Amino acid sequence: MALTYKRVLLKLSGEALMGDLAYGIDPAVVDAIAQEIVEVVNAGVQVAIVVGGGNIFRGVKGSAAGMERATADYVGMIATVMNAITLQDALERMGTQTRVLTAIAMQEIAEPYIRRRAIRHLEKGRVVVFGAGSGNPFFTTDTTAALRSAEIGAEVVFKATKVDGVYDSDPKKNPEARLFKSLTYSHVLKNDLQVMDSTAIALCKDNNIPIMVFNLSVAGNVRRAVMGEQIGTIVGGSCEVI
Image (cartoon, rainbow, N blue to C red; front, side, top):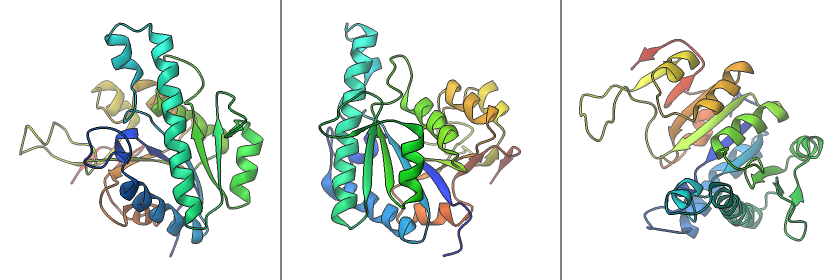
């Protein structure tokens, strides 16, 4: 496997772990995701992961339902830790050493997030899963992914989704929607394209970290992304449609 990237950060939504379920975690889907990660780790790629918690609890929805926003966000952070530990279990059953590092101290089940410790784990070939978001309310796990990628020196952020990339309009509503091959950070921000939230995009722009948006449900896409194949949409280049 010819590698384009040596250290990557994979952003997984909580919904990615649901599969076709209405709620929670589908073990078969988690195992399938873990298998793809193991393949690239075995090829020599250092992999860090930020996982969301929307399959269990989403802070924004909790706030809309009447919860105080900060409290709702903390509940959402705890949900991400549940997903992180589940992913850790799947990876380790496949023989890949994994460490969960949390921004909220949970020493009985995970290590606290320390930047140098995270980098050391990566250098030793361990998959590092970041849980509990950034540890602060009002910030999304997209922003956490951008922040952690800058902190650990990741070469790229892989935003794994359920769609093929970024379109100029909703492909479910517009059959003529065009898929972007590449986009500038400024175009994403100016046109409010829902790649990641604006804080995350600005962080990646300031630190010159490209974002690759691709469909996680297509088998082999993580490997293709690491090899530098043109899949999905790259944010950080010029604007170009397929």
